[in-house]
Structures are given as C-alpha cells and as structure tokens.
Image (cartoon, rainbow, N blue to C red):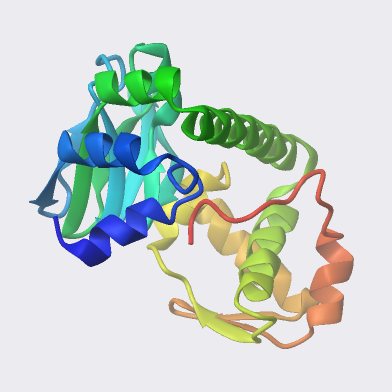
Amino acid sequence: MREEDRNDIRNLPLFRNMTSPCFDALIHAAYDQVFPAQLELIRQGEVANFLHVVLEGAVELYANWQDRDTTMAVVQPVATFILAACMRDAPYLMSARTLQRSRIVLIPAVDVRAAFSRDHGFALATVQELSEGYRNLVRHAKNLKLRNARERLGAYLWQRSQDAGGVAGFVLPQEKRLLASYLGMTPESLSRAFKALRDHGVHIDGMRVTITDPAALKALVQPNTLLDTALNIP
C-alpha cells in the first residue's frame, strides 16, 4: 500500500485515534485492489467479511426486493463501508457495486472486531461513527416522508451548493437515475421536480445546475438540521 494511501486512511475519523501498533496491525492484514466499473463488490444477505475503504472511484450502495431496487448512498474517496455489518458479524443489508474504476482497501472484519476489543480510541470512534450513521438515516427517512419531491430535490441542491461554499453553479456528480432513486422518486418525477424548481431559482442544463435565486430556493426547502445533513451522494 502506498504511504499516501495509508495516511489517508489514518486520517479518517474512524482510525485517527488508534494507537500506532493497533493501526499497523489492522493495515498489515488489509490489501488493496483495483476493480472495474459496474462490478458487484458485495451482495445483500452475504456475511460481512471485509470493511471496505474507497481510495479512488465511486461505489453505489443499493438494495433490491423482487423486481425493484433503490440507491441507498454513493461512497466516494476517502470513506468506508459497511461498518455496522462488520461489527455485528451479520449479513449485509445492502449490496455494493462500482460506478467507475475504483481502488478499494479491504480490511478483514475479524481484525476490525479484534481492534475494537483492544483499542479504546478505535472503539470510541466506532461508536461515534455508528451513532452518526443512525442519526443520518433518521434524517434521510424524515426527508423522504415529510417533504414532497420538489422539496426533496431542492434540499439536495441547496445542500450541495452550501457544501461547495455557496456556489451558484455545479455539475451533478452522478447520473440522474441514481439521484432520483436516492431521493425516492422515479426519473420522470425527478424531471418534473426540476421543472417545478424553475420558479424557485433553479436552472438545469444537462448535468449542470445553476441556482439563480438562492433566497427563493432556501425559502422553499427551509433547511433544518433535524432533516438535513451532509450529503451521501457527493
């Protein structure tokens, strides 16, 4: 593993406060691999054998039932998935596939659990990460249930603009199909929502979004930390 990659992993909140011997042992057991686009990495229902760390590329977390599927999140560098299943030694509740060529570090789940039992800093960081993940899940569920399609899309675009420093224009990072699924709507509903947002200062041209009236968009979505959080689709 390259030293810069090792440092990127070390700087993640999950690993930042580990003792050096424990971190070194965890990384020693890990290996990194390059995967092509559209490759299934894990499948829901399978036992969690690895904690994955995305170093390059992008990974979609998704779930399916019968003939339907939905996007749960998109993981981009540098970030991990799926910690909860590794800690529980339980089946994955989601599947994962690469959206583009991706380089991923795989850390054996058994070593993750061993580090949790012997390293106080890692144990505390694990509890904090799982707790924040639960709170973000509640926020996302509330967003889906309490906002209509236009408001959900508007909130997503507002948050993306704010995360980029309040910029007026940006390019959607993933195809609209993924965005629609993540926001709990069909591609057709997403298209109608974009049209409805024209009256609230949003212009869409292909994949490029321009917010011409930030005040109008903010008035529509009424950002609130009880519903909104950092984006899962960067």
